[in-house]
Amino acid sequence: MTIDLLAIAAHPDDVELTCGGTLLKSAAQGYKTGILDLTAGEMGTRGTPEIRAKESARAATILKVSWRGTLGVPDSDVQPSRQHKLALAKIIRELRPRTIILPYWEARHPDHYHASTLGYEGCFLAGLKQLLLEGEPFRPFKILYCTSFEGMLPTFIVDITKQYETRRRAILAYQSQFRPAKSERKQRVFLAIDELDARMDLPSSPTARNSVRPKANAGSASSWPSTNSTPVWIFSPATPAA
Image 1 (tube, rainbow, N blue to C red):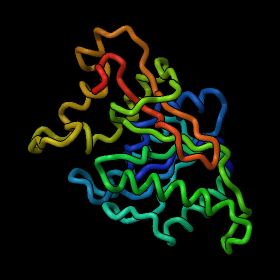
Image 2: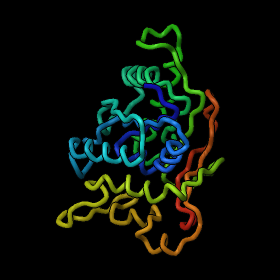
Image 3: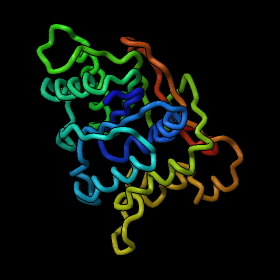
């Protein structure tokens, strides 16, 4: 199978939170989309790898992606090692995506910013003709960067107003992460789980119900091999930037 657009992220649910709306819109326009989770999210506080695998499959169906896979990198130890880059390059050669979406290279979580480097360098290796690796050499035409946090100036915006509700359902498919049992003790984390709807301006929050502005994925295009782009930025327009 070959696809047009591949989103790569460290953990299951990262893509849904950062560029799920863009994947939905691309699929609606007739493009074949895919998601590559680098890890199975096995170090997460909530849920098990088995539960999260079922949740990610459900979310993939909601997002209408043509392909979803897991690279098998250990969670909490995403590194741009030669082994991981070659494994990623092999998938790039198999899927031959014209466009790649990667995590922005600055992040709180080490797995996220290492995923950015791993993704970029894996794409580069995939195009080397002399590299002894299965598959025909191939290098994506364009790389985009995404983040769910404010503060990075985007260079283009993708209006996902029509996809917003469906994207929300894809996020909430991860029930173990965003709809934990009432018996579980609440915990405070950055973008706290119990405040997710408000932070993401989801329709269940008062801010979203009172907002009439379009929802958006925003970001930048980077023609290969430039690394000087600003990120694809998902944000909630009703929430002031930091």
